[in-house]
Picture 1 (cartoon, rainbow, N blue to C red):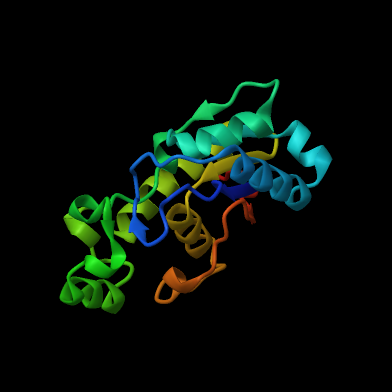
Picture 2: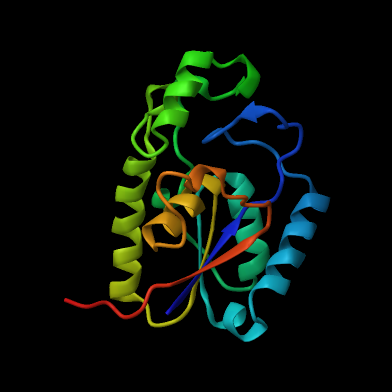
Amino acid sequence: MQLYLVRHPQPRNAAGLCYGRQDVAVDSDSLQRAASAVREGIPERALQGARIFSSPSQRCVQLARELAAPRDLVLADELLEMSFGVWEGRNWEALPRDQMDAWAADVWGYRPGGAESAAMVAVRWCRWSTQIRRTMNENVVAVTHAGVIRVALACAGQLNTATFAQAAIGFGSVHRVDLGPFET
């Protein structure tokens, strides 16, 4: 089974902002650019037959609806972006340098903003992907966030857990993971 991880469209007026789980607006042009990029990145037959999942964040839901129409989509809290706690809504440049350095020194285990570490995201990712492998036979498209995609690719062995945070995950980009069959 193929799992296609899709990053949401570029948010409006969010450059330089640590927005994490905040619901930030997406304009229609950004939505259409992302939908077009996804349709180019996933074979048409695979997209048409896939089950569509989405993070509950509106920037993801809007794209997932566009890709799923006229089918329904399934919301999955496990696909939410990593929580950045007290960092949310602040400019990256305004965050305390010592905390940013601590995160850079331990990108997998540090809890930015006192909230959630990448390792914690990995736990929920593994729980969700295991459930998908157990219950799905068709391909799956998951519209989610850069942090979740990086963690998923690290868990799949496609990225190194020490350097995964530097991986470029563009808006509307598609990343494929072969989940394979579930084995008991």
